[in-house]
Image (cartoon, rainbow, N blue to C red; front, side, top):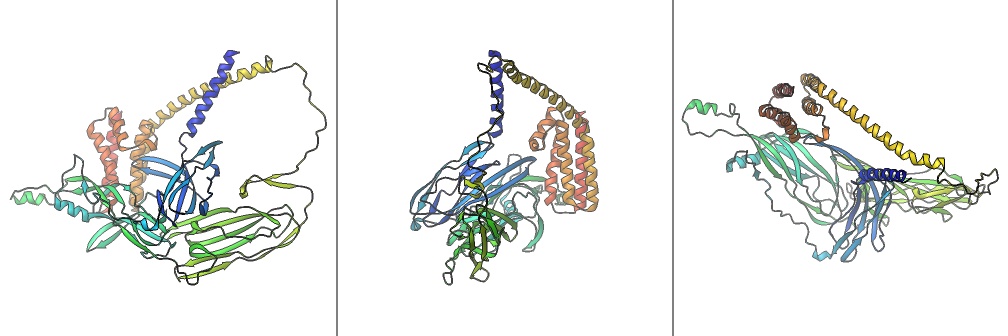
Length: 627
C-alpha cells in the first residue's frame, strides 16, 4: 500500500512539473508613462504574451477613465540573422485623464491563462503642474553619424568618413507638421544608400512623447526598394519604419531621432607613392577588390510638430474627441420579442482617423429595459496613409415588461480636419413591440458585461422520484478489489509513458539519418529552382531560394531547427566535424554576400550568376569534407 501511494505522488509531481514548464514564460505587464501633465490625456496598457481570458481591471475609483478597455491582439513571426521567433500578445488599453498634481497609483489587474490566474504589476505615475512641464528636448548626445570598427577592419581617414556619411544615411519625414489635436499624421523613416548594407537593427527607437502611436509596417521584414536622385547622386531608398501618430496634447512637440546600426561594405584603394603608371592603373577602383566591412551607426533628424487646438466655434455638445472622416451605421436584430428575451442593438463607426480612441456612444433605452455595458470590437486597416477601419458597439437589452417602446436616435459628432468643420450623425429610431412571455423562466447575470450573462431554466427543480440506488452498510472502497485496481493504474500509465518516449527517440534518430542523407539532394533541388527564377529575372525569389538552400543544407545535415540557425552555429557545427577553415570561410562568405547583393548596384544577371556559382561550390566543398 505504501508503494502504491509513492507512485501516485511521483505521477502527481510529474504532471505538476509539466504544467509549470508550459506556463513559466507567461508575462502580464502594466505599461504607462512615468510622468504626465495635469489635464493631459494618456494611455496605459495591460499586455500579456499568451492567449488569455477573464480580464479583471484594477479599481479606477477616483480616476477619470475616458476610454477602455480597448482590446487588441497581435501575432508575429520574425526571421532575424537566421533565427526565427514567434510572438502572440493581447493588449487591454485605457485612456485616462490626469487629475491634480501628485502621484497617481494604478493597481494590478488579473487575468486567466489555462485555468491559472496571473497578476500584473502596479504603476505609480507622477502628475506635474502645467507650468513645470519643460517639453521634449531635442538634444541627445550620441555618436550618431560616426563609424565604429572592429579590430579586423581598416581605419578610415576623415575624408573617407565624410564620404561614407554622404553614401548612407537615414531621414525622417512627416506628412503634416501642423495637425489639429487628435488628427492623425504619418511619420516615415527611410534609408538612403549608394553602397551595399546589411544587418540592419534599430538600437534606439524614436520616442513619441505626447502622441498615441501605431506601427504601420508591423512585423514585415521585407524592405521595398526604389531609386531616388538627390543633388545629381542616385540612391537606393527603402522604408524601414512608418508610424501613425495621433497628438494627445497641443503645443510644440518634438519627435526624438531614431538610431540604426548596420554593416556597410565599401571598397578602399591601396595607397601608394609609386610613379609607375602600370601600378597606378591597376590601383583603379575597377581592378581594386580591397573590400572592407564597416559597422556604422545612423541617426535620423528630429522633427518638430506644432499641434493646434480644435476650434471652439461651432463645437456641438455631443463632441467627445473623434477627429477624422467617419460614417455611422446602426441595426437591431429584432423589433418584436417577448419579456425576458434579449435584443442586440449594434452601432458601427467606419472611417479614417483616431478610430481606436472613439468612446462608446450613449444609448438611452426605455426604463423597462435592463441593459449592460456594450461589447466593443475594432477592426483596423493599416496603409501608407495611416489607420482606418471599423469600431463596432453591441448593446444587449432585455425588456422586463410588455408594451410598445422606442429606442431613440443616437447622436455621434466628429471634427473633420479636411473641411475644418464639426459634423453630426444620427441613427434611426426603432419601435420595439414586447409581449408577455410564457412560463416563469428567469435570467440572472454574474457581472455588468454582456459576455458575463448566464441563463437559468428553472429556479426550483422537482423532487426526484425512484428508482433509487442503495449501498450496503459497512462497505468501503478501502481494501476492495476496485481500490487495488485504481492503485495500479498510475504504475501502468508510467510504464506506458516510458515505452512511448523510448519509441519516439528511435523514430527521431531515424529521421535524423534520413535528413542527413538527403541534405545535399534537397539543397541541389533548391539551387535548380533558383536557376529557373533567375532566368525569369525575379532577383528577390532567386536570393530567397539560394539562402534557403544554404541554411536548409546545414539544418538537415546537423538536424537543427531553423530557429537555432545563425552564422555562429554554422561555424561551430562545421568546426566540430573538422572541416578546414577555407571551406568554412567560403560557406560563411556566401551567406553574407547574399545580403550584400540585394542592395549592391550593378548588373543583376552577373550578380545572380556569381552568387549561384559560389553557393554551388560552397555546398560541394562542404559535402566533400563531411563525408
